[in-house]
Image 1 (cartoon, rainbow, N blue to C red):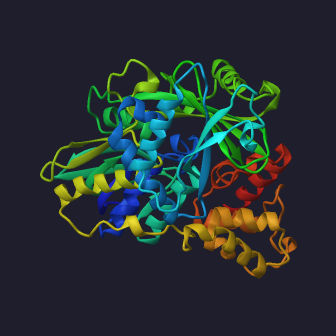
Image 2: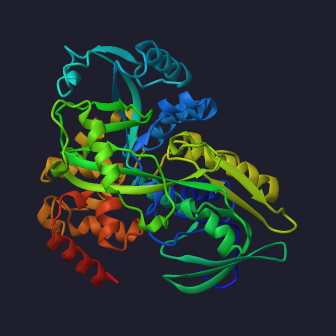
Length: 498
């Protein structure tokens, strides 16, 4: 990017909101640049519970607009990215000391009614004394309800939105900090410091989608005083060795009114989370506390017949959700809906600040941001993302197994597990990763698990991967399976490429 280059829209933040806005905007014909100070999805967007869901518990807080929008997006996003999104069935056991069964039935009936389902199956009632999903649970749980939502590879969802934006002409800059944003001649002068050194550009409009740092951008980078718009809420998860053999998930009620999920994760693990706790520190320093760990272990052990213990924990992760501060007394009651605020206009230079949001509603949030952009810059193109496909997702939602078989037939010398993993991550781009190789010996250096140089090279060339952490925890989840020595070898390899 040359000094003093001009763009229509400059996006601050490479999480799901920023990447989605950049993709939608460039697809409508605007010139777009995006800067992320770290790696794509390195903040909140890679620390989620990995769900595309309506938010069943939000019905209790009367967030009907948010739930309706989120439910309608499940199948839209599944069709957009059927490689990284898949349907799940959730089992909600009835706990006799908590919400009455009729309340659960009514809530799930509303969930089905509001959902706009075509492919996702409806809710059904379970006899947990007979159904396989009752076997891992304590014998006191006899009645349950099973409903549909979806799983998403959260970090890859961000990266693929950014990849599609770049393919359409957006400039995506990772590890590039926005040091200053100042109004200048009816637009903005943006100063950057990153991989390409110090640079500057001009933009007609700025979108501040910095997530937990959104207020810091307003007060520091943009030089305004007194920005107190977000409530930082910490969510933590634990990953343990697989607790049960079937493929269903659980949603457990807790006596404090919160819920946690237990979800099959990366074949050999179970993901348990999340917590809701106000957070006052720097978002980059967030990590699980002993209290949160105890909470998750206790909440899961309330339901599972075999207690879940600290010794079973294989990995933990935490993130900070930048919820719009609506004055709620408790963190779990704060709104999960997004709020957009416009500062300025076409004459003085307009900025759109994005507060809140979540993976499920990111596409709709981007459309809402574009509505406001069009009010300032004028309309260029029509909304287009609802029927679009993300890179690698060029097949029908129910065709994942058939596509996996086809990939395996084209690469008969490759291990079935590797073929399936590549299909789940890259979809129709998997042959680009594998190239002409017919067995693993042709994939280059081995870095542990089933990670080879060919895949690493693809991630560096196409998905902005720079470090072992980028590769092992955001582009893949192979960090669960590699040793410290293998991580060091990967770091050495990545350094040798620069």
